[in-house]
Amino acid sequence: MQRVTARAGANIALIKYWGKRDEGSNAPATPSLSLTLDQLTTTTTVTRLSGASQTIRDTFSINGETLSGKGADRLRRYLDLWRNEGLIEGPFAVSSQNSFPTGAGLASSASGFAALATALAAFSRKPLSKRLLSQLARRGSGSAARSIPGGIAAMPLSDDPAAREIVPADEVPWGMVIAEVESTPKAIGSTEGMNLSRDTSPYYTAWLATARRDYKAMLGAVKALDFTAVGELAEANSHAMHACMVATRPALLYWNDVTLRVLHELARWRKAGTVEAYATIDAGPHVCLLARREDLDRVLNLASKLPGVARARINLPGPPATVLEVG
Image (cartoon, rainbow, N blue to C red):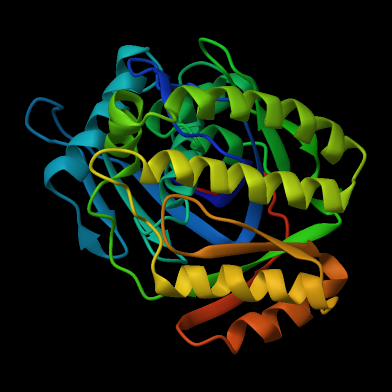
């Protein structure tokens, strides 16, 4: 076997992960719960490189561009983790394609590391359970653990957590409209931002307590398939996380004027009885609108007409990370 291609969907957290419990193992400081999406995907091909490993190094590319610097170093350290665990050996070429903006707050690292971990698992010298694969994906990106099972997935708080499926993708009666706004890659990435919030935000301790309460409540709401309860919790939890971010020093202001416009319009839609939908926002300016499946077209139409929304598209619940081709 010389080449493996895998695909994973980005997941949008309904209960957010913000903060690290242990940077060494990349264990989150909050429990989280998410919905994997079927249209925001990363497809990754991993190719074994021939020759002496001492003279040939790993190579990386994203969307056709060679990756160097900190990005390449991060991926090389991740492959070293697999090599040090005795799972793989030798150098590899990693090529990824994202179907959505990279590094802009739409969980591209989650789908990216989930796809990479799934491809590497095919090269593994030892069999890997879904739980272990989720744990290994988390070591690359905390939220990547949730893209492994797909659907609605929950990751509890522990020293070495893995995500588990709560509701399979085809049984989730909701979806999301992603309202993308014009943006550039984040000046302060999520990992650095989390550390800043931990060290400087006066609301960080309150955020951790809020996230734990919201997680417990969300588990019950999801199991009951109570859309209103799920939506209200998701929106409130998202706002709580961003409040912690804004209070960070320097402030983490990932929103822009279009983000606020979408939030104001969403509140008007609900108040007027136009449609019931709820917002959740990751570490970026894009707004993810949670709605019942039968309302997604209406939400898409409304969101697409808002000034400043560059693109809006429907996402249904996404499947688990999967291997597409082995050769």
